[in-house]
Image (cartoon, rainbow over all chains, first blue to last red; front, side):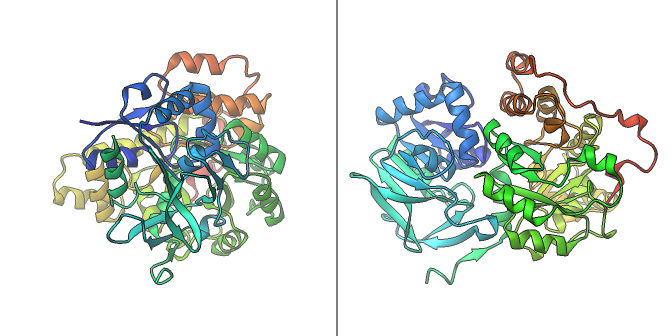
Length: 187
Length: 297
């Protein structure tokens, strides 16, 4: 069974673990260094990017993720995960991992009362995807080789660059497993 | 097409927001400067207040929602979510906080209750967190629309014993549900004055259907890790940080302790040399009528 490391520092970790298992993978929570090199895929969940980013650096997991991503290990980065996977972030002093050549705007839709859910079209999906945006970021700039796979309200909310998928929304909250299956198929 | 299926303030969005706080520390702050210290230390969110619970206790009088100006200054000072407290039952204070863009509202026993009944939280787009001492209280709040539960503990004392007691009661009651048949679950629901469907859901999930944090008396990294080992999804720290001798160090150490709650070596390392924690009050010495946890039902 394909072993997927779910970064388990903070945020909706158990929801991603359940989604990976429901999609037919084996999910391993990653709280310290040494686990990522044994995984064939990685999930970076939602939560607070400042909090997760700091602990990724302190624990040494950040370096392992960068190495794995450079060695073509597929990564699914959602919400705060997308922020961390970016090359540049607009605000706050988070050190991103730079896995995808994009700039990200944090909390781009306003306070929590402006958080929303909506059906969006995703490139390659035959029917719309129910996307849950919670204090969500957006992609402000896509570099060369970055494919924009979904937009909402004129803004880029999902991207892919080779082995890295980045989503501004939360595929782990709806039970629609298409993105988790996509990750497993890429392993 | 896009706008027709657009939804705000759904249960999924409210509970989802709470889930993003899991494994994190939410810190009480009274100024933008304190909020920045909390963010720098790795807090997942801050709770904006006019005074920390220990000072609210000392001041006496009626404790109300903080000045919106102060809350707005705190919102502008940080990038992490900002929460703020309203009095139990004071739905207009809640409307005001929603209007200024607070990310979550704490309907809190730390402030002086405005009503014996709690706010109908389903009417709001902004999610609510509420305190509870036991499973019945937690499920009544969830039924009213709370997207997150926290133990009441005994705020402003720095004495963790009540938070421990409340977390154990909630967890213990949920364990009791295991193996009960539907008639027994109905009977239990009636005994604890809770919605039978929510009781059945807890029995099935073996946890609350929403995120469950610890609060009320957490003052050290060891206290925070204790609550995590007892099953909390995360912790609120009120007076424990800014009433300690070295708030920056205490805040960072509590964040580390929550992330490494089951690693005693790490807990030992982060607990070293933090200076004096908040002095605190032994809850058994609290005069009758001064227990905040008795507010609400």
